[in-house]
Length: 230
Image 1 (cartoon, rainbow, N blue to C red):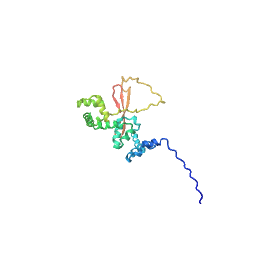
Image 2: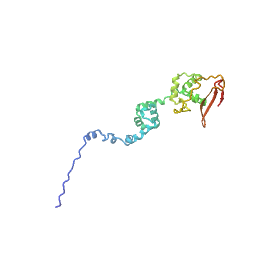
Image 3: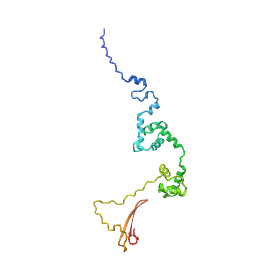
Image 4: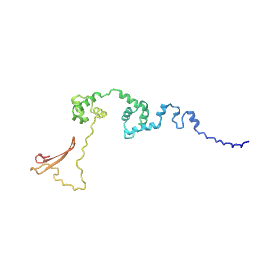
């Protein structure tokens, strides 16, 4: 007879405590429910896919909650397909119901379409009209188009359509040297003179030309305010 083989020792693998509950609920260990989903749903539930879409937040250069909902809705409408709306809404922290309501509102005709057409017409009349702000635009509408809307409504329409002009803040031409000795105030704000060529004042002005900046400085006589040179 051959040599008897050694009996193999079988070790029972311990069953997880929550294995039964997981099996009954039909979920996987990770809780994604991917086992009961078809291929299309698993593709949308893929966390890597969601992380790729999360990169759309770089469009705002800020966190989503710091951006208005209108901007987020606009971004979803232009970027997301029909199957990605839910993911985009979750990443940008807006509700699907709110996005749906926004889309329906966009399909309606614009309430101030006639006013917006008049504003664009004024801006297209002359190249210098491009500098019109809300106040000058309102006065122009009242003068030429008998505008029935208020000043705040004109401001709202211009802001919503990106037609508001930014305030021009001229930059200083000179920078004070704190280490330099201060000059004496000879005129002491007395700009009158009894004789010519006794008190001369000047100032410098900056102009934006096509090929760069142009600086003009005029010299005036306080006696008769005559310009002696530029």
